[in-house]
Image (cartoon, rainbow, N blue to C red; front, side, top):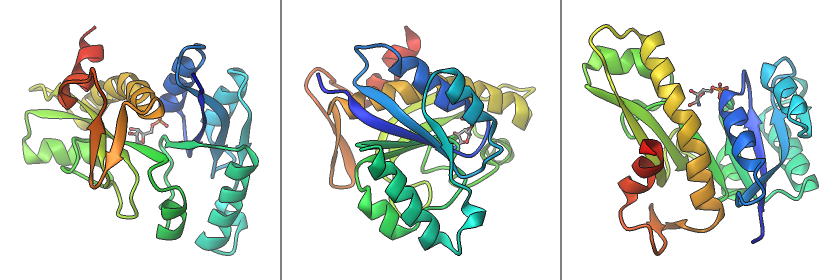
Length: 218
Ligand code: GRF
């Protein structure tokens, strides 16, 4: 099995990055993490990556004249590491269409809502305000539109009567930590692949929802 060379892009604490690093530390995982890159030099996740023995670097977007110059440098770093796949994990910088298209069908993102509900920020407060009974998270293939693209996997959690955004957010985050490695594994081994606007699942994966829920139950 060829393990896909994967970069993780972060901007902050990197808890999803840690869950991906943990999964990818196993030799049988179909992706291995070759670099962690943060657009913020002060991101706590950088030290966590180094502690896990992973190459980590900062590419401070403020040092570049504009988005295009930053993305050109980011692209060059990714190519220098011979990256196949990119995982956005709390990467808080919007990426422009040329960059997204250059990495088309090779870049995943995790978003803390059940997309297409609640794209953007403050997802948990908005879910509570809307009165939904279930919240969750989504791993999707990145497209130029924000928080859009073929959905690889989702996990849902209940909204409980006493929830505030923090409590609900913690419950969703725990689900994120289980979902993202699962989704990356499916994608990296080609068991989930892009077909048009959707994901097609390989043999042995009978029902897309079950691919997310079965490992989460186990
Ligand atoms: C996560 O909730 C993720 O879904 C969102 O940003 C947050 C990042 O958290 N895109 P962390 O840096 O992985 O801890």
